Image 1 (cartoon, helix red, strand yellow):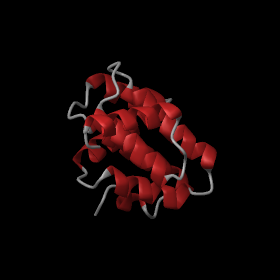
Image 2 (cartoon, rainbow, N blue to C red):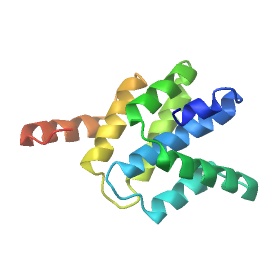
Image 3 (cartoon, rainbow, N blue to C red):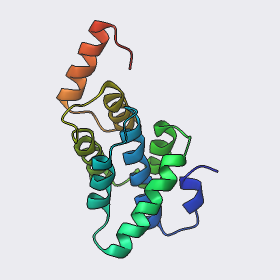
Length: 142
C-alpha cells in the first residue's frame, strides 16, 4: 500500500498534510541528498506544536520509505484538492522553498516541481519554463 493509502479513511486535513509531506520528501529525495536542513524545514513549515512535530516527523519517516513516484503522489493529492487552487499553489510554493535550502534548484527538483505543476493544472512560473527550455537546448533530460 502506498503512503497516502494508509490515510484514506482519515479526515481530509490529515490526508492533505500527509500528501504535502509526501511531495516535500519526494522533492528532497529527488537530488539524492535529503539533508537535515530540508528535514528541519519540513518540520518548521508543517508543525506548530511539539505534538504536531512528533506526528510530522513520523510522517516524514514513512514518506522516506515510500517507493511510489512523485507523480503518483501529486495525482492522489490533486484528486482530493482539485477544487482548491490556492492551496495547490501554496504546495508548489512550499516545494520551491524546500528546493532552495541548498541555494540551488537541482535538475531533478525542477522536474518534480514541473511535473507537480502540470498534474495540479497550474501554469509554472516563467522561471521554470525558461530553465526547462535551457535544459532542453543543452540536451539535458528531465
